[in-house]
Amino acid sequence: MNSAEALGALTLFQKEIIEFKNVIEIVSLCAHQKSVVRLVIPENKINAVTHILSTYFKEYYYSLATYALINVSFGPATTNYGSIDRFQKRVGVEKISGGDRVIFFGTDSGVNQALQMESGECNNLEASSIYGYPSCCALSYESIERGKSWMAACLGNVIGTIHLPALANRFSTLIGPQLGVHLDYFPCSIECQETISINTINRECLALSPLADFIKPINEHINATIIWWKGCLWYIKGAFTQDAQIFYRPLKPDIFPSSISSYATIEGLSYRENNAEVLVNGKWLSGDGENSPRIILFGGH
Image 1 (cartoon, rainbow, N blue to C red):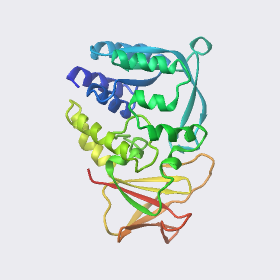
Image 2: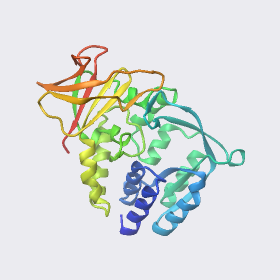
Image 3: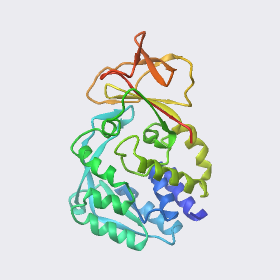
Image 4: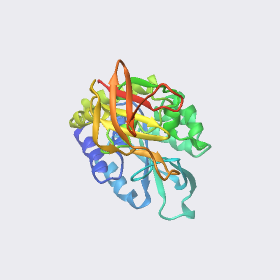
């Protein structure tokens, strides 16, 4: 990635046209790790985006999809800022005004492949190959399209307390400042090894780019403890200590089902002999029961 390309990606991000995961997509493209990026852009931002792409990415091509996107439903989980899962369908551009548009951006062959694929049925497995995503995650996404929460799918096999590299932390892209090194797809599981391998390469490419200053805040953000319980998720930043920690103010969940009007708060966190416990209503709960909290400790580099 050269300095002009880095400035172009940073401009799109600073103008809040794209999210940081899209910045990582662009870094991966410029490092020749993938051939095309799919950007979903509000219709009123299209001119700004095409100007930035033409100005800063001289070696790449872009093309606007012939369809628009409209929201058809939102997933079962939400944050204090809105829903985290959004499902869209394609409609003719002549049928709607003000929806989202798709820009394919990359090499000539990559853009043409994406255009050809998305002009048809847009099979998830074929899409994963073109966009550089793991096939296992593409197959898992089919259940998410049928209405399953991607967090439930990602954490479905977690029991009790597990330890994972910080690079596996996909939830970092949902919690402010929404930094991470994931590409723009949902992992099939929190332990997906292909995803961790891709993320390792992504961070290496970012470290070698003019955007390397992001590495430190990313590392600080992805080292975190995740608590998953009753459809709610708590995100506690920072490396975990061995001692019990009582919170001055009980923690409300960062992500929760939109269907519930009340939820538990967590009063403390304890870690002993590779097992973590959470304090709720004055009682310590371990993760060894079917309805007990699931606790993921993301740490290390």
